[in-house]
Length: 208
Image (tube, rainbow, N blue to C red; front, top):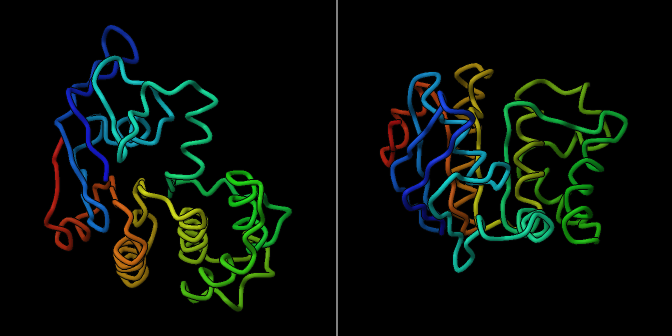
């Protein structure tokens, strides 16, 4: 699970954020909503260890991530946190399959090819694995993002506006996949969104 206490962050003297305490158990989903400028993406980046809080605590299971050194935080993030960002950041020269395998190799030093194929098949992408990312639709790319986020059995999945660029059908598919896979893999799922379609789907929510 993931919990926070008294979390604060400052970009500068005029941009200060104080966030409500949150808790998300393994296998559950928490929605973080709020208008633009309220710090939704900043909070997600704090939870993922991409930013360091000015004060407060972020704990994933028994690990206080804000107290880890940069190198230990990088290693911890790779093994325990899966991130589904708005921008895909694929290696465009690599196939869909190799992009997912790369995420396992960077985190563990091992190439989890069989698991990558299994995840992509589960996400209905078995016929796309040898294509380049640019050859996929936006909805398919988002599902590859999900496979990449799950490849290392993370304890926490963080998704930043995962449905904002999708039509209604694909938004429903991605939301269901994220929730079902988080439950199956016993991961805490936190979704940052302003998408009204998700607000009606997930009742466990915090509004910034």
